[in-house]
Amino acid sequence: MNVVRKIGQLILVLFFITFGVTLLMRLLPGDAAGTLFPYGTPEELDQVRALLGTDKNVFAYYFDWLWNFLHGDLGYYFAATFGDTVKVTSMLAQTAPRTLLIMVYTMTFSILVSIPLGVFLGYKSGSRTDKVISNSLFTISSVPSFATGLFLSYFVAMTLNLVNPTGYIPLTENVGEHFKSVLLPVVSLSISLIATFTRLLRSDVISTLREDFVTMASSKGLSNRWILFRHVLRPSSLTLLTIAAINIGSLIGGAVIIETIFGLNGVGMFLVSSIAGRQYLAVQSLVALTAIVFVTANVLVDLLYSVLDPRVRVQHGSQK
Image 1 (cartoon, rainbow, N blue to C red):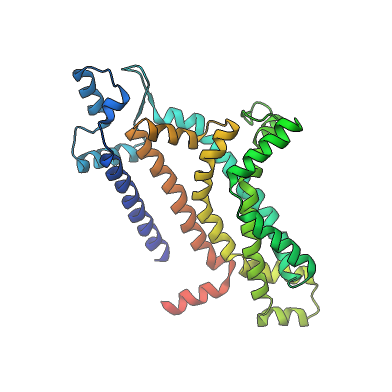
Image 2 (cartoon, one colour):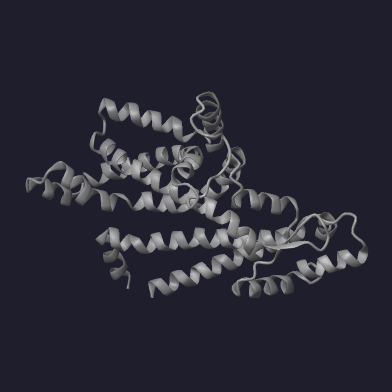
């Protein structure tokens, strides 16, 4: 029943998000067809409005778009020349893999670095090492990803000439060059995440170390490493998972700027150009897909709570 309720909440949230975007796009001043083709004839503009759906009221437009979206039709992207259109699915096939890989690399790298560092700082709480690293992480967490990206682009790519400052090499083309092309974007997005994740995990580890079951495990003569990573890490990782899921949305926002800095031409740049060009169908579909990824990640993390911490299962059972 909990899964069914979560799925119902997911559907409701997605409805409000996508319909809200529809209303916002309709409230923009001017005519979308006229923006796309300022020198088009009245007949041509009427054709564009029909393809966009802006010749219908907002409710008819939304449910037509929703029906097509559920059947895999994400609409069209209008080129500069009248009559030339490209399917949004075709453009996503080119841009989405880049952004998805960057997000996967960023989140994986951030978590792999944050977990051992956060556990170590929690165990060493109050020590000189903990104070120095924690204060440094606090400073780093306030630095925006675009500032880190600009610094790395100038210092690592242009000054030291270690990697190319712009461009993307597909994984299937050359594995080594692929990782070199995504190294700076991933590090730019990861720095602030690592600082945030580590500080949160450190705080939860300190709290968990005071629990009775940790004291009992210690009294049995178990090693500190076993206690930390077998008994302490799992219940301490709930906040980390929640923040990681929430940051999936912020990663997409950060990708807009990072993709521009490093010339990756991913979904972020695609979304920006679609908004600027009043590409209704593209914007609607991109926002819907982003919302699906974001909300689904949060629901999955919520369901994983009971797996990571038995205390959550007990609470759910008592509520029933």
